[in-house]
Length: 304
Ligand SMILES: O=C(CO)[C@H](O)[C@H](O)COP(=O)(O)O
Image 1 (cartoon, helix red, strand yellow):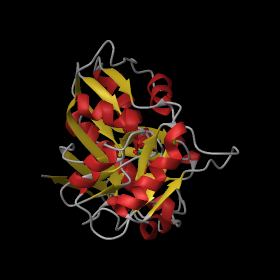
Image 2: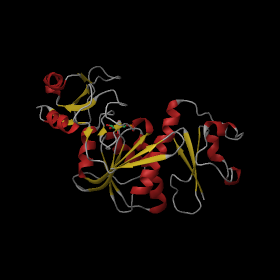
Image 3: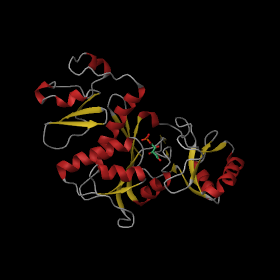
Image 4: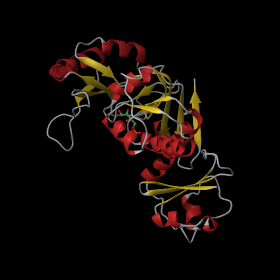
């Protein structure tokens, strides 16, 4: 069976040998060309490498896509990680926490794809306005913590993942609801491209630890963070609006750019003790496994 799926401007062709939904070990082909999705099965090559690279694409007269930019390659990694994590961890009848960001989009699309074939009967709990829209747009059942306070599995992106699968999250500003959902989930799975894979927090993600603060307290919180830990505590400013970024919860964000290696458990509890701090983007000891997708479509899974 061949599945043809469009992810925005990307076309993904998944080949599998049975009627079961494909997993990431299936052959993947990505193309810019929407023409691609109009191909009949017999036009498709009989056997393909696991993922066709740019060079290999250039041998294909029919598809002739160009995969050149870094972000295209990152997207391949995101899709591969999201697909494999969903295939391996989402089961029928579950309550599923849905994270936020760009990578989770591919996970939700894969869940929706499986749902059509398998009738999974899931209830999806969002971590943000974006996640709520994603759930609805993809025809999945929207729930809330009020109706489903216990979650079977949560899936989410991350800004950085260290060797102990501790995370920095909140680059997209949704850290507070993300952490609440993760804390209610029996298992949290993280999906990311390999750029997020890091030995120590702060190596790859250099924009600081996002911290959600009550608006009236942002200034003293900034000062206290800098006095306690050094570094720079910046108020996150909006790009398409005058003034600061306002979170889904009506709060502000401080991005604390830190220096050196930190004792993250200690830092996190000190940060949480500052009046006005609502939540931090440090997700410590919360993750069951991280899926890192690379530009060649391979996925590395890290568990503790
Ligand atoms: O924590 C987050 C939002 O608050 C995101 O999960 C994180 O920023 C990763 O996003 P992306 O998948 O776009 O790289």
